[in-house]
Length: 427
Image 1 (cartoon, helix red, strand yellow):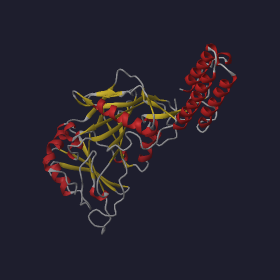
Image 2 (tube, one colour):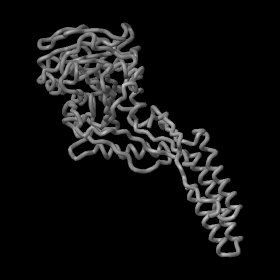
Image 3 (cartoon, rainbow, N blue to C red):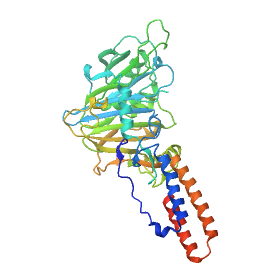
Image 4 (cartoon, rainbow, N blue to C red):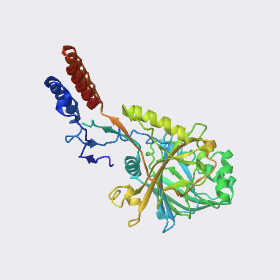
């Protein structure tokens, strides 16, 4: 159900007939307790139905991932578009990206996307595992390595070719090809990317596969010092041709440490996807009702971490997988990434990975199960719960007092039936 959808029918509760509820005083008690229960519910929804809303939107599970990426694969054109955002530590001028790609993007296929953060917000709101209020039934942690400040020119070393270089929204971007990892490492360091020498095998991994490199760093104004006055990083958007959906994960091992980092991926394709070379597991929620948003998040995160831990290694956990109706993202920032007239399926995958887990790039394939996944739990409104308990205590107190006053067995029995029926309705 959509987060704004209201079920106007409401739940139906069978109420015992008045004759079975004992005396007139108990009937009045039951009526009063029902009023006490209904008043707080009106603060949520006047018609007494179900009002669904995200619990503390923009602060839920997955929103603060160390690395977030939107992947859109158009199988008709064979083009993959990536929007990449990563956390970093320090000033923006101290940061740079080195991103391997299977085919070199054209100049028009690379940009710094000022609206990228809004696109991630759109997808967060659509896919976030959430709890809904239920009314009464009555550091440098991404695809890249740390870089330096003001850069030099695009000097070419033997075995390194600067195919193109451009400046977009304060970011210096170089498109590179290379056939020698040591020379590529030297070029990166000569141009203030500070790529560690021990990472040569990672570069060679991509050179052996005949991949290319996109190197990006924040431009620092002249005279501002080594890394001062640089603008904050915005997501990079780039597109390249590929016959498989890929995410260049192994390069992240250069800038990641032994502490596991959170990675969140949104993949648009023609069907639900899974990783071909990493464990992939669908998330499920414990079958229970939660008392608060905090309780839900704590229970969810505990269950999520258990799901990540698989015998064969950390798994990509599917938290959302569903076909996107054509009009669902129409008019949104994300919608501008999707080719019109096509049917899209969105899969959200999240995991925690340390540098030792990043042994390969993620290659995606169609998940033959193709089962929709959308995670929603239930939280009872605390105002309703408080009113329910108050009314129940009131009914029990009056009911017990009425039982004490009875003089024959039948009246006592009727009074007890009435109290039990009222308690049943309030629980």
